[in-house]
Image (cartoon, rainbow over all chains, first blue to last red; front, top):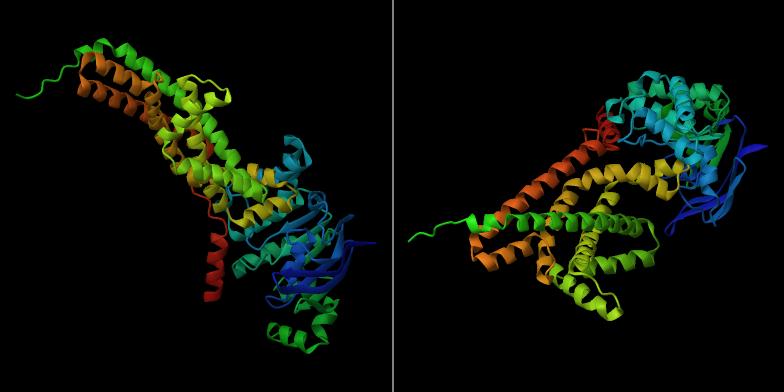
Length: 243
Length: 239
C-alpha cells in the first residue's frame, strides 16, 4: 500500500499550467528526492500534497486522506503530513520549546507536560536538546532548520515533506541538516524532498524524480537515474552537478 | 496692568474637577475596552472573513473615519431616541467614542496582521492549525508588536477625544471645567488646571501601555522572519 498517491494532478497559476498531469506513487518508508530546474513545478507539487496549493484536476491520497479540486479535510491531513520550509519559518516570538509544543497542544489537545516530553524527545533527535529556551534569532540557520524539523516531528507525522530545506543555508551548515534528514530516513520515515543537493539525493533517496515543464520527466532508483540518465533534459541538468 | 492669576476660586471647586477626571477615566476606559474589541473583530473579519464582511466592515470604517467625532456623538445622542433607545449623555459618549476608536483600531490592527509574512501563516497551517488558531498563536503577538506605538497613540487620542462628550453635558473633565469657569469667571486658571490633569492622566496611561508592552513582548528584537535566509542566500551567491 502506498503512503502517498498522486494521480494526474493539474495546477494552474492564473492561465499558466505549472503541473501538467503529475502522477507519483510513494511507498511506506520510501525516501524520494524531487529534482529539476526552477519553475519545473517541483515545489508546487510538494505544496499541493498538504493543500497549501489547490489543484484544479486529479487527486492526491496521503495518509488515508484525499484532496481533489474541491479540496478535502486539510486539517486532519496536515496533522499527519509534516512540512519543512526553505526559510525555516520558526515563530520568532516563541522559544524553541514553545515552537515545538505549540501544535501538539493546540491542534491535538495534548497536555503541557506531555507536549514538553515530546518536544524534549524530538529536540534530542535533532541534537538541540540544550537550546529549548532559546529564541530563533539566537540560533544559526542550521540550528533553526533542525528546530523546524523537530517542530514538525512533534506532530508524529506519517509523511514528511522537505521544500529545499538547505537552499538558504551557508554551505558549512547544510551538513548538519542533511545528517538529521538522513537519520530520519534511516528510522523509516516516508519522505519527499525537493532538493538541489544532488549528492544527497543520490546517496540517501531510494528514488529520484526529475521534473521538467510541469511533468514527471524521468524517474528511477537514484543511483541508476544519476548514472544512466535517459533523456537529454536530465543529462543536461545533472551534467554540471557531477564534475 | 498685567493679568493677575488667581487660582483660589478654582481650587475651592477642585473636588468637581477630580470628579470630572474620574468620569473621564471611566468613560475612556470603557470606550477603549469596547473600541479595541471592535478593532480586533473588525481587523480579523476584514483579513480572514468572506468578501461581504470585508466590505461591510470597510463601510463602517470609512463612515467613522470621514466624519467628525462630534458629529458622530450628536447623531448617536439625538438619533437613537428615534429608534426607541434613550441613552444618558455618558452612555451615548461611550458608544460614540468606542465606535470611533473601533474604526481606527480596525485599520491599525489590520496593518499589523498584513505585515506578518505569508510564510509564517503557512508554517502554522502546515502544522494543522485552523486559520483562527494561526491568527491567535502565530500572528497576533508579532503583529501587535509592529503596530503597538500606533495603537497606543490612538488610545491617547481617545482619552483626550472623550472631552467632546462635554458638548452633550456628559459629566467628564472638560465639562466640569466649563461649569467651574462659568461660576468663577477664571477661564485661564480653570483650563490650565484641566490641562494639567489631562497630562497627568495621559502619562499614567502611557506608563501602563509600556508595562503591558513589557509583558506582551518579552523578546527584544522585532521579528525579522526570512531576513536571515535572505542574507545567507546573498552571501552564497557572492561566493
